[in-house]
Image (cartoon, rainbow, N blue to C red):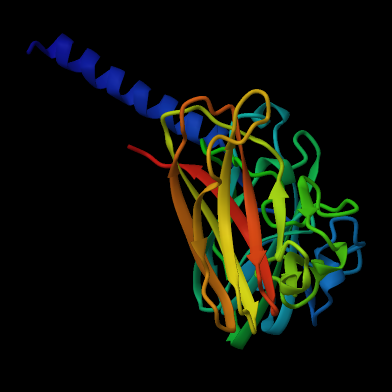
Length: 316
């Protein structure tokens, strides 16, 4: 290889690297800047419109005097051109020791040990081109640092297939979810400590008393193509369950007819339990235009709750 060819190749590699770096930078928002911090604890502080003008301000989160409960808030703008490109990811390099993290008042995750955090944020929770608020509720065991490092919001190529997966977006019932059954009194949409993440979860109670003995929540339609494999996942909590608690996926044709039996159900167990992850996989049958997720309780005299629902396409 001649010196000229070698030099040209080197320049080309450098340019590719620089362009890749610029592209990565354009898809990441650094949250280095003015953070607001407040000692103590109030769940209202997760709300994006809460007035924090009298809170302490820090250029770096590590400068906040963390001990016990403290809240960190940061206001940021997501580019309008990101809309439709994918979901977002919140990355926190260092957190001590417990956290409950919110974007625009919506819970996106929590953790119970010191370390880093990476939380997915569905695009439906984001104000593109407008104000967004990251609020992190932290409990620090020993005096020291609650949050540290280059905290960032990144664009991903993943797109949420479930609208309102944590039931946080309000309506008469949680937006994009519909209760079905004989008695609406069995359906719970709770703003309580029972939630797995965020403020809300949905539940079903005493379906054994229903004439049909079955109650379920159903999602909005999810457009799918035949010939792929999908995975549906839910977190489920149970109190004295006696029946079948399942997450199910139903496939429908263009006329709205369900194709065959509702497939891929998995029983979550007949025992009192704290939040447990369960999932099912299913092949999308021919003729499918869309799917729905069903959170079901059958012949159950106890109470079950559901939170953080996902539907993803399995990679080959």
